[in-house]
Length: 164
Ligand SMILES: [Zn+2]
Image 1 (cartoon, rainbow, N blue to C red):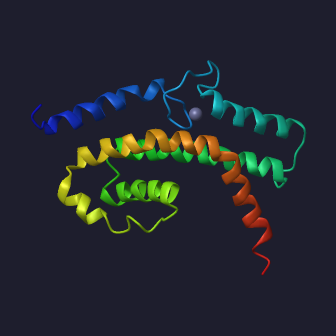
Image 2 (cartoon, protein in one colour; image 1 turned 60 degrees about the vertical axis):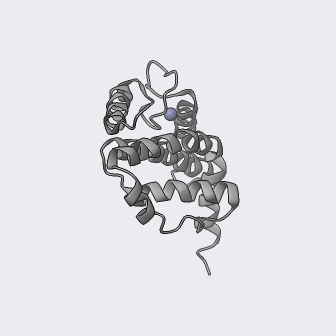
């Protein structure tokens, strides 16, 4: 098949149209809870926050803080997706995805440092956006699975290391 630069544009357009069917927080394409319009995974975070608040947890309490950080992570990944669709992303944000992958699989966050210039010469903005989306799909799944660990590490870092 010959190279068709319009294809990336069409692909982005159909992703934009899928937005209303996606989870309100993480924007992943999953079955949604009717009431909250959240996927199962985000909805479990929402329910955890609700439950802790109903139990009268102070906003500073560890469990509640960690749950709030998890919510932030859900929303953060949804925002990354929306940035891609809004054309806010460029090769430096695409480089970030490459670096996430290198960090994850090679334990080296610097491996793809400054690759944005190479990417700029290779790709149109629409192609950058589609490739970002293709990275976002598995990485947002991974983030959803590791959300509790990441949120807990953030809490511990903020509460046990700034005294020094
Ligand atoms: Zn979700």
